[in-house]
Length: 116
Image (tube, rainbow, N blue to C red; front, side, top):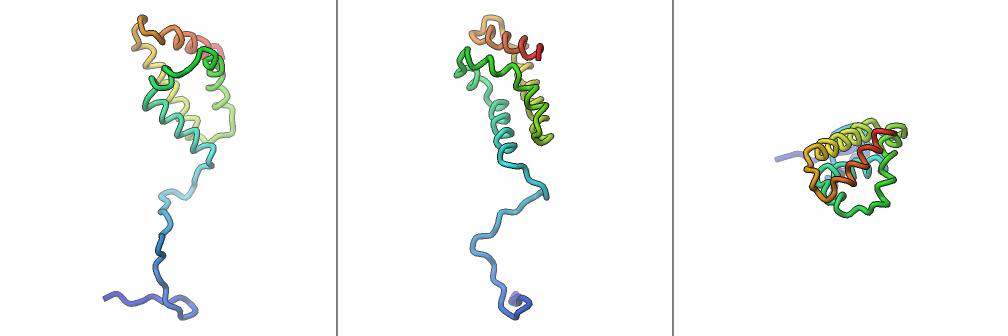
């Protein structure tokens, strides 16, 4: 049988009915960085979902995303994740047949991303 624990005042210590979540690292990311990591992970998990639902006008904003993330004050993990996502999309593009309906859009995005 386990003995009861007492605090410094002599009161019995009880376990919390709702324990706090255990943190495995001492540092945590701010919400903005966590959101960016989540979006980048979803993009890597299912890039066709984003490519199929994007408008031609939205592609223009993608040109400077890589440089904006690289030059921003986000955590290094976000920058690494953005580079990995960019590499993943590049790999998919080079495996994509030229007859794919999204080939021209991705080709234009890739060319513009090289200029930034």
